[in-house]
Image (cartoon, rainbow, N blue to C red):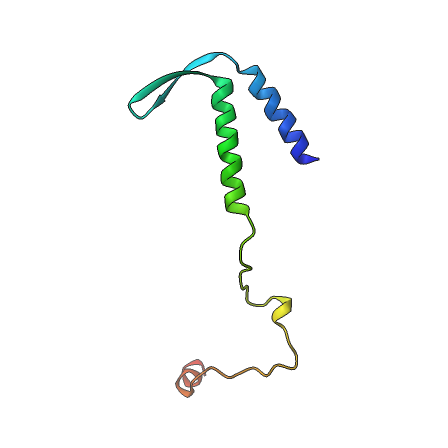
Length: 87
């Protein structure tokens, strides 16, 4: 539902901005319509969002419920020197 609302609002904003403007990019100046520029920016933002938010390998997060195993014995990883320092 939220995606539909955002799409409708984006369409209204884009359709209200149809006049031509000067667009400066590095050393070049282009005369394009606001409609085209807003559409390009919206598409690029969408693609970046898809690339950043796509599911990948699951990341290990310490303390997750899946990691808890009551039958698993914890290994003591502290050395005697570390224990003395903490005490």
